[in-house]
Amino acid sequence: MTFEDRLKQDILHNGPVDVGTFMGRVATHYYGTRDPFGTGGDFTTAPEISQMFGELLGAWAADVWTQMGRPNPFVLAECGPGRGTLMADALRATAKVPGFHAAADIRLIEMSPVLKEKQQATLRDHKVFWHERLEDVPEGRPMILLANEFFDALPVRQFQKQGGRWHERVIGLDERGALQFGLVPADGFAPDADGDFCEVSQAGRDIVRALCRRLIRTGGAALVIDYGYVKGSGETLQAVKAHRPVPVLETPGEADLTAHVDFAALAVVAAREGATVRGPAAQGAFLHRLGIGQRAAALRQNAAAEIDEALKRLADPAEMGELFKVMAFCGPGVDPAGF
Ligand code: SAH
Image (cartoon, rainbow, N blue to C red):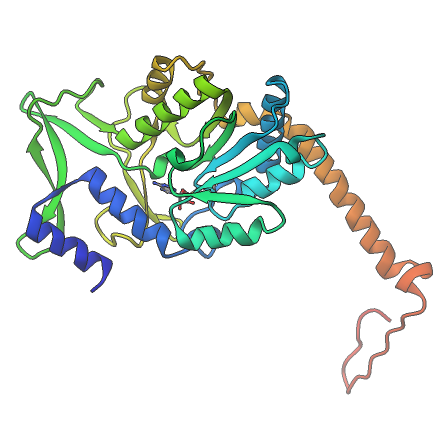
């Protein structure tokens, strides 16, 4: 039985499910059965676009660690590390920070067995521990945590006002047995957001609450990067397959399902726990403040030097340019280039 058939059968037996339950099941199947990144996959993330992203986040983490008085040991954690690219780039960028690697107890939070294997391969030169949930990371040490495009993958429930009353959006079956959206009255439930439509990520809030409690108790900082909003989103639930948006219910479990992150809601939860909240800052401004311009210039110079070096090796008389020779044999009517 396919994942979609199982999903439909459960709905047939137990009735419609809320959007969050649907999203959670889809995410477990989707991430659990593939590597979705890159041009041949469904979507591309910042660390997969350039090494600069992970390098700058590594520098950010090392700076936090220095400000904290270089605790040894400390937990260097990442939620939803994908292929492990961000962490690998961050570790390479911090290799020369005295004591940082020796003190780092690296913990990756990943639920997908397929991606865990990828991460193991990418990070084979480092000692790394894996956990399915953040709560499973042992307590008692300061923590520096990174999370890029993790919170958008967490389930949201959707609520819509109709006839003056709030309803919850659910997913049921139509007469032909296809998945379809519906609304049920959300009795006694009053979303703490304005507007006629809202999305609530309980999982996101729970993780931030637990995280901030830990940061208050044992110190540290967390950096959350994602697409999102601060006020009034409307509906943001979306499915992406092969780099194109597709209808959310069309191929459940075969497309990446995400919702924009409600940063204001996360900030409220964090502040309530006593954590200092900075941002949200725009990603571009943040990266520029961390020095992405200078990093790009340095890489460009390296690349230029590498290209000059290759040119020299191939064509300089003192290298391959003189000793190596080229000869062509041609039939009638051919005047080959290069001679
Ligand atoms: N940070 C990576 C990957 C983003 S995709 C990058 O920027 O490239 C989302 C990641 O979060 C995947 O690794 C996925 O398997 C993981 N993930 C999604 N939901 C999760 C959950 N509830 N618990 C743990 N990991 C989850």
